[in-house]
Every structure is written in C-alpha cells, then in structure tokens.
Length: 312
Length: 252
Picture 1: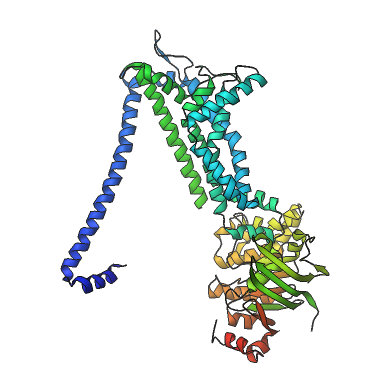
Picture 2 (picture 1 turned 45 degrees about the vertical axis):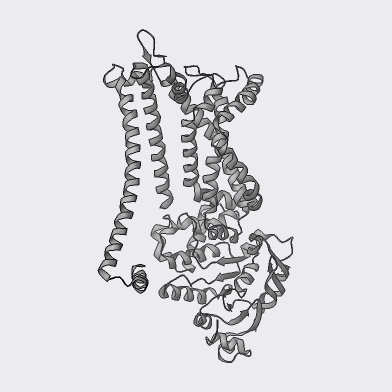
C-alpha cells in the first residue's frame, strides 16, 4: 500500500529510473523473506531434532533392547540395575499426575478468586499491588520453592499429620504456589478482555455484582480459565527440582497424601548422572523423557481445543 | 400535557474534576419518547447513564442533584440500585447479548429476580420476544446462541431482555447507530410500538431519527441543556440559534 508514495518520494530525491527502483524493492523483499524463512527453518529444525533425539533414545529400549511398552507403562517395580532389570514407571506417572492435578485443584480456585478481585472488585489495588506480587512469584527460582517447602511445609505436615512430612501433599502444595501466577495471569487477562457491554448489560437488568460474576463473567470466560488451568498443570507436570526436594522420592504408588512418592521428572534428574550413555538404564530414562514430551503435546492439544471453543 | 414519568433536578455529573453534565433539570412525560441530541462529548450519554445509576460503575464518577422516579430520589445513597434498575431498562449502541441461548438471554433478568417457574418464564420470554417482533424469527431456535443472530436481531433481543424485568422506563443509547438501514427502521417501528407502554429516553446522533420518533427533543451542548421542547417546534422553529445551527448541520 505504501509503495506508490515511497516511489514518489525516492524519485524526487534520487531521480533513479523506475526500473532500477523496482529492482531495488524486489531485492529488499527477497532479503526480508530470506531472513524470516531462515529463522523459521532454524526453529523447526531445532524442535524436530530435539523430538527426534528424544524419540530415538527413548524408543530404543522397546525396539532393540527387549523392554515391553506395557511393562513400562503398567509395571510397578523400577529396578534398572537388577537381574533381570525392571522398568515399571507407573509409580512415577502416578506421582506426576497426582501432584500436578492436586496442585491445580488447590491453585485454581485461589487464582480465579485473585483475578476476579483484581479485575472486578478492586481494580486499582489489584493492578498496583496484587498483580506485581503474583508476577514476582513466577520469577522465584524453583530451588527456592523447594527449599522453602522443605523447611516450612514439610515440618508443618510432619507435626500435623501422620508420616514423615515429605510426600504427595508436600509436593502438591509447593507446586500449587508455583503455578498460581500462571493461572492467575491467564485468568486476569481473559477477565480484562471481556467486553464491558456484557457486564453493563447484566447490571442494567438489576443483577447484583455477585450474580454478574457468577452468571455472566465466569461462564463466558470459562474456556480461557480452563486454558490457564491446563497450562498450570503442564508447568507442574514438568517441574523437577522443587518437587524432588519435598516428595521423598520413593518409587512406589503412595497409599495416602502423606506418603512419599516420586515423579517422572525427579527420577530423571536423580538417575541421569549415574548412567552411561547408550546403556539400557540410560535409554529407559529417555523413555521417561519421551513420555513427558507426549504429555506436553497432549496439554498443548487440550489448550488448542479450548481456544477453539473460545473463538466460537 | 400528560403527567411526567420522572424528572431530574439540578443533576450534575463529574468525572474527577471534569464537570460533564451541568445542573440539568428536565421532566420526562409519561409514555412519550424523548430524544437527547448534541455533538459527541456533550454529556447526553452520561446524563442518560445517571438515570439508572450506571455511572456508579465508572471509577471517579460523581453525581450531584436529584432524579425523582416514583416519589423516590434515586441519587440518594440509600437507593436500592438493584430494584431501581429493574424499573429502568437500558439498551446500548452495540448489541451485547450474553453468551447464552436466546431463551436464556431473555430469562436472565426474571430468573434473578426470583421467577423460577418454568411456565411463567416461558410466558415472559414469548411475550417479550413478541413485543420486539422477534418471536416469529426465532421461535424455532430459542435454544441456539444469541450470538448467532444478526446485528439487528441481537439488538432487538437486547431490548426484549430488558423488557423481561418489567421496567416502566427504557433508556436507549444510540440503539440503531451500529445497524443497517433496514434494521434501523425495524428498531424505530419498535420504539413507536413500545411507546404505548413505556417511557423512552433515546440518545441519537441521527437528526432525522430524532425527528421521526420522538415527541420531545433536548439539545445538549458542552454539558449544558441548551433547549428542550416539543420535537416539532425544535425542528421547525427552535428558539436558540445554536440549536438551529446544530439541527440544520451548520456545526457538530
């Protein structure tokens, strides 16, 4: 759209022939295209090589090293150096799901309330105090969360409930604080982007603030709110360090919230250093990484589905 | 002259330091259409919004003066805003149906004022959709989303929605300015019909529309009420020069 005007200007300035000018524009276009395409290509290559690398290592135990997929997904015993070696990863899967789902159950209501407070009830205080505070939570390194969990939450649980304090609940509590900013930020954005007319329409019908929030605002933004929750779960699922510090790292399925368990990520970080590259044990850990990757894809997929519902 | 439905006395609205509406006293005759005209930013929408206390929702807005509706000054801090807004319906420039079915859009208000009976709700929904001439167009798809309707239908749905809480006054803020001429004509017909039962206050930028549909017209300028008279007289023989200039398009 701007080309004609720029043509006029440049011809006035340089007096170049029309054909030369056209060639210059074409060259400029091509240069821009090459740059953008190169960046995109680099990104695609990176992503695919990571996926390929994880898949090639992670599939090796099943393809060439005689481990059955079923034994890994459903097996209860993890003895990679045993005779015969056992690779039952169900306890880790269970631990990962239990901690991240529990974390979401704890964090989601808090996050929703916080974002409603920030957008509907006290917008000024919310924007100047609460929002920066919550964003700050996102910037704290996970090792600090783990440390705080270990020195505050674990002793508290140990003194209050049966068990050692370390366990699923401790992990879920630490994770819930970690994913609070994710869910809150997304929920706040979606509540802010709600057209003002909807709220006014509800108030003008004589609805109270609570009726407006519960009957109009929340149902209308529900898909976006759920997107936030799923992203929160995804983040919790992939978190290794903080959980590992408080969950106890016992490779079995816990019978209660106060028993220690472990997660996919913790087992990878714990054992990766003790294996040699290419060994069955090492490859089995890559299989766990592959499972993590698959779960991430699943979460992204769910988010996409939710977003499609928003648009409709 | 019929008796008035409500009146304002020295009504002022401030946004922070800005004096947006300046000491306006107007009376609104029962079951007539009053059009508020004037250039953008003249305070007519703000004035309209203060009649059902919608300005409460805007941080920094402050109201002074009195609005008397049914023997009650609604600017009094003790006013039950929920009940007030039940008596005064409001329709905006942009249709804003809820993300719910057509039926639920209309049933929203009555439901939250305590009507739970399904038959009663059905009756109200049908009655309101008939009043807005929407019933025949949507009766087979009451449970489809209100957002699937065309812009003009959405606007009529919003009018039906506000009628459902049985108001006696309807406030309309440029209800047709986002619509095409055919839909606009339908809304205007509707206003002429609704006038039999409701007192209507309408803000419009469309001079011909004001002339066509209103009984009285008020001209606002920079927060002041310049002139308020029968529409006929306003458009043929206004007493103020600025009114004449504005109506005949010499400024604004």
